[in-house]
Amino acid sequence: MNTTTIQLDASIVEELKKSKDYPRQTYNELIANMLRLAKVMKKRNQYDEFLHKIQQPKMKELWDNKKDDEWENV
View 1 (cartoon, helix red, strand yellow):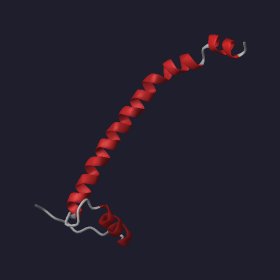
View 2 (tube, one colour):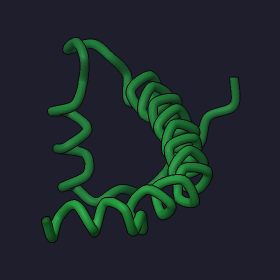
View 3 (tube, one colour):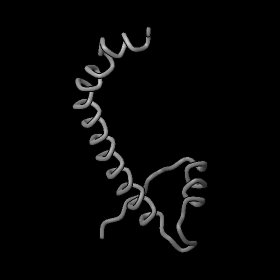
View 4 (tube, helix red, strand yellow):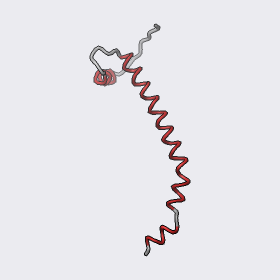
């Protein structure tokens, strides 16, 4: 395994310590888990945006319905 040294602000290291799932969890494991979660959330967000875009025309059709406007003024 290749390893590197990275510089982090002390405040970031403190947040990493607080984020550990268990006391002996390595920063490597913690960051790997965070990256996996970030990828899942990114995919989920892209899916949500896709659904939103394909629903927009139908929602516009429903919201711009003149018959509904007539009922509101009865």
